[in-house]
Image 1 (tube, rainbow, N blue to C red):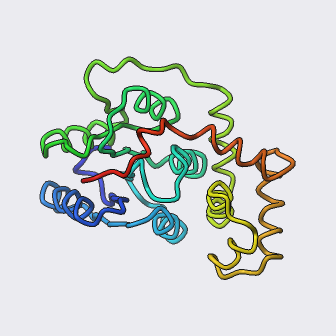
Image 2 (cartoon, one colour; image 1 turned 135 degrees about the vertical axis):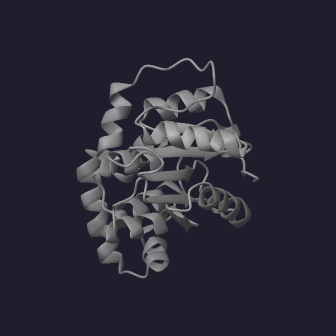
Image 3 (tube, rainbow, N blue to C red; image 1 turned 90 degrees about the horizontal axis):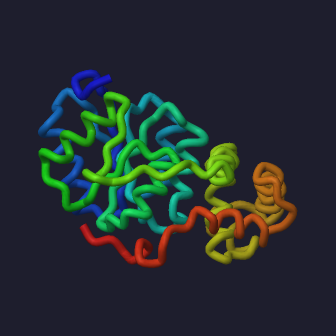
Length: 223
């Protein structure tokens, strides 16, 4: 596939100014391609449930409520055919190496110019990987790859509940946030623990925390 063949790209970023600017750049460069804008990972999940015919997702690494690389893990586990190009204002080499090892198709700095954006997307749509020049690859961790598959087995609702669990919310709080009953939350918890192969909430959070990145990378991005 190349840029001329791409029909639908999605930009997922909670900062409206950056999201609109990046989407606008893509539309000017490739007017034949539909470019959707999403302010949250939940919006992307809803779109995927309705229509998974997406050629590329440009995903902010630091979306609110996401635990490090968990959003990437869910995408790679559930929609492995859709390439994910991570975008971030932070370009820590260790994070980039880990993201690529976990299945990201590339890593793009938010400070990248239009030419670099064009080159990165072209490379990714051709099936290659885009990373900063000179970056040494990192070997894949079999245990982390297994975790990616487990996260990908979760339904969108189960994934949301797991993220809330990671934030320390109780069943009652999760039920209120999602407008569902506590009994429904408990049923989802049972399914989550079965899919993650853990026996309690603490083990589930411990497993989730393996997808954390460095504290510095969790500072609020600024476009």
